[in-house]
Length: 207
Ligand SMILES: Nc1ncnc2c1ncn2[C@@H]1O[C@H](COP(=O)(O)OP(=O)(O)OP(=O)(O)O)[C@@H](O)[C@H]1O
Ligand SMILES: [Mg+2]
Image (tube, rainbow, N blue to C red; front, top):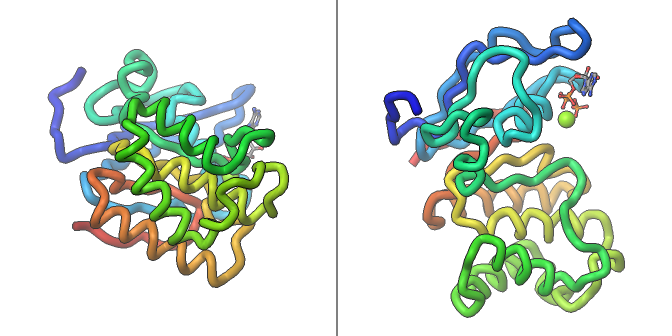
């Protein structure tokens, strides 16, 4: 642990990642404060997903350190996990289970009481316009609807840090706008899902 500033949710110090002596990222430094929504922009191959994978602990940095809620994402990896909820560029759902059973399962992994959690789940399904698809198997949904369920999966957690890699890919323009509204609304009304990294092209918002 370093001296922990509870206002800083992510702290990247001199972050670098290389493969076979080829540097993908070098000297990346930033802090993300509580309540901020940040977006990472850059061309294909710039290293956006790599940054998300490093913060989430999926990848190990070649140099530098990352702290999530005060814990080192490498040496204290297990301790950072409860603070992070992620959406990857491919979905993390069980294809041979229904939408609602997937969400019920992931809610249970967060230790949530389903009676309480289901209120938020049904609200999110309504907001994303997929309420009527709740009993369908994931494999029978369109790619866009699968993306929406995966976003619901991440949003039902009360994790302090929400990492989203290209969350709006596969969504049509109307759904993309809705997603931004849902994320901001969730940030304002949610308990602490207030940080978001993605591959989109702007930085906005604090509360
Ligand atoms: N396992 C690996 N071995 C070697 N190079 C890798 C590996 N994984 C990623 N890279 C390289 O790291 C660079 C950054 O990749 P990354 O996936 O982070 O880019 P990105 O900005 O997310 O791109 P996109 O917008 O296409 O998703 C790319 O040049 C990629 O080829
Ligand atoms: Mg990427």
